[in-house]
Length: 453
Image 1 (cartoon, one colour):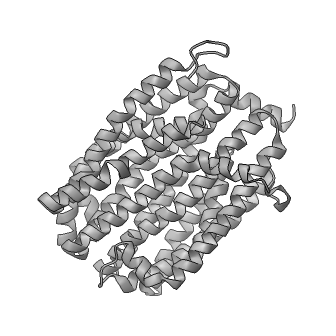
Image 2 (image 1 turned 60 degrees about the horizontal axis):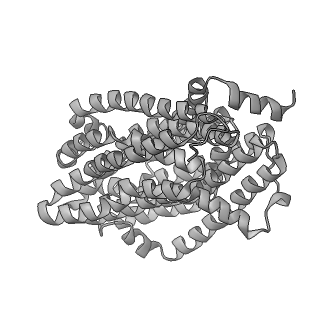
């Protein structure tokens, strides 16, 4: 049996719950480690000053922008990689991943150039206060320098997953995350380089992670990463962007909403920005569970939907929602009882702790509804129903959150900032339920059934 046949058999015949966990757990681990490095970054920078920690919260927005580009192209290409590998067409699958890889690096280079030219206004736009601006510029410069490597790494990471090589995807990102934590300790603590050390550590770790992922992709993947596969057909890029657009909305709206939040926090000192930055990073750490399992479901869903194994898709979809909900609920409930202690781990300043305590507790309540949002969004994206997926992606941090936080902050102050995201999460989760029911009812159980979606 050749490699293509073996992969087809594995993706369509392995117990679907087991397969999702096999693909999702490495992804979850890699995302958790990546977020642990973000939390470690927050911790080490917190040793410098509140202003430095506020600066890293601002740069979280820039990293969301970079990830928006990478996930759009990576997941957009990955859905077609799964499609054509299910059809046993490796050449066309190679065209999609290669085209997305080189386009992503080109776009990141453009962002790097313009970001460096307009560094000061860019950092202000992202929500840097006058006191946090110098640190934001220093850290932002290193994030921009590493952005082509970051984009390339995330694109390859996603396509490794869609080929069913989640372990190698995990290894590439985990290596970079661990190196970043080690680099923070060396540059910030031992060498006392301050915010520059944190930025330098980020850049070095992203470059090394990129090199590892390129190497693993070349060695282990069915698809080929070669310039000769770069598509000259505009339709290829349109299909990639269209399929990946929900990811762009999901990450891009997150960047916009975080920028709005940071700009509102300026009215309440750098302690507010630092506190909400810690809350957001910790909540993202928990979200990794839902996102990781969901990303394990995506290649299973895309592959089996193309192979017309609809019953497997339904079973995997329900498993993803139930498993994510159980695990996220356990972790969130633990956090609700010790919010002050969690904030204290990253900043011992009393004003930061006080401003973050209730915000974290509220955020953890809203997160309980997130598995519904993530699973339904990833489902419709994987079956190339990008319009529905895009609407679902805009809900949590866009359509509901942005007008809500502006209204609540203007009426009840900082409390409005604390409760806007959890309220948005609840409404987004409830709004997803009709789409879940629609898919389960309208999608046939087997090829040839008449009630197709």
